[in-house]
Length: 509
Image (cartoon, rainbow, N blue to C red; front, side):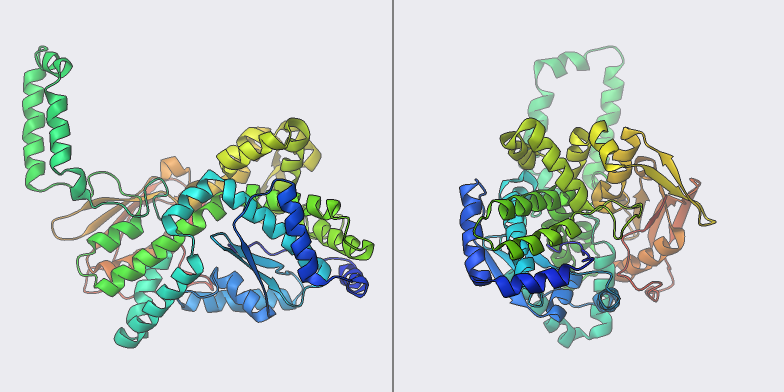
């Protein structure tokens, strides 16, 4: 679980150096006592394995999302961008933590003892959150509690595929899979049956039982129902000859392509299913980011405050790092135009615990995700105190305040989080000739697609589908558009337009 970059300011480094000189116990000693204190305060978590790693390895984990993962050109581009930001002093990665049993936490070895003492307390807060939150528990049970080992096994299978089929073929499949990385159905199960299983003997028996109940028998005798019933039965008979695929709109594009790709080889299906499984693992991290970072920040602040065994100089340096992490903006006397999840989450949990108590906060931690958390517990008083507002940016570069309405603030914070941050794209029809029809529910999204980049993603899909692919959508102004993939043979993938991974149907507001 990659934590967002944070930034150090002021003389935090000097304070950390002074704290290290005052250190008498060492990180291991402080970590053990902080863990004991955390359990005394009611935190519950699986064992946490901490590891100090070099800066370069920390950057790799932050970019790849996992210590070992299937390699792809896009991660290398992101890595260069991350290094540039770090060299410019614009980011500082304190830690990366992965929930599981055990949890794994990586800390930068260049961090001071004070910083890694704070990181230890922060990670324990994350581990407690992951052990309580229903979304983390559900997806952890589906995707497994040993993500690091599973990811390494997938990376080995990919290396085998590279040796057998060559880089060009393997990258074409990964381009498509990573372009659709967020297009999974998070309301379905990770391991789900094929469509045929739903219409088997049990399904037929259930339909027959429903047709024989007294209410249905009386309904059939109503005037005009006999003809309608006959028409429905005729339509059902035609569908029985060739059932529609999919039987309803299918939003899990990775699952559908893996199971219904007409010419996908087993190794290609394996890549799609591997990307899908990792997307399921990362979904709770995405859906609970504000809650999770706020909870970890609340507990690291409280643990440091109550850890009376910490030397004063070390405590001062650690709490200075805390203030840098949870500040609302990067520098002095600036107005923030983006929400820092650490700052917002920390302030909200403090507000909740002050008003409703820790027991109630733990219930919220268990039951909510960011959407319900923001809608239910970001109140007007807190929004005013934090100075939250909605802004709009014009094409000429002007940025202006648009609203201070509480509902507008909540929706602006949550807008990027809907549907895993991706537009609602569904497979609606697999034709007899193998061509595929996709439909963008832009009315539900309230936004259109960047058509140029959507065509590029469509080309990625068509290359692995090996049949024509059509997408019904709208542009950012609203007029409908129908995009078609190339049909003259196997479509060639486009060159990457920007230094990012193939975007999952990028949107324009």
